Image 1 (tube, one colour):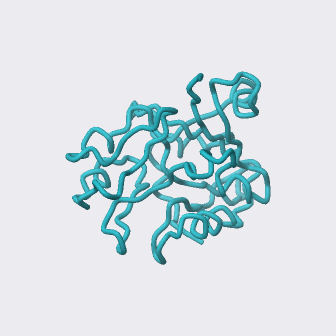
Image 2 (cartoon, rainbow, N blue to C red; image 1 turned 135 degrees about the vertical axis):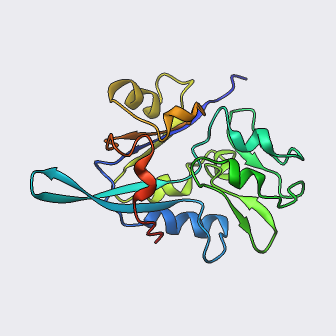
Length: 200
């Protein structure tokens, strides 16, 4: 069977900042209060001289193919699925926080109930059942596009070939599999952390 290569595209032109993705993720994955697997950062930018517009930036684990979190885990709790999704084995995780420090996208946290590291997994349990991630299924503006890059006929492959996309912190060399359409050039490298963390 041909291995899949999952990726997500987030079209910032369509994101309305409704936080439906954040809420759906919390419910689907039982994320404890005060913690988030995905969230939407908000800020302002100058669209034309003297006119300010809002910027919404959905954030999550970037599903890197060269993931720093996987390399630093001392017990092998962070690992790749056969289709490249970065997962965490909570039974092996010792809560050392090395992965949290290593992640350049601030995408991990320690679940206070399990004392295990946690993050977005593209809702891998849903993928295994032939379903889309919860955030994709509930996105009001259809800003999230998900699929298999190894399938040239998938929507994600077609959109990636048709539109210019950017990734966060490309200088890190992590090969993220979360792509953005319409990412402000000043945010695509290092300054996105200056946005306020309004997490739903």
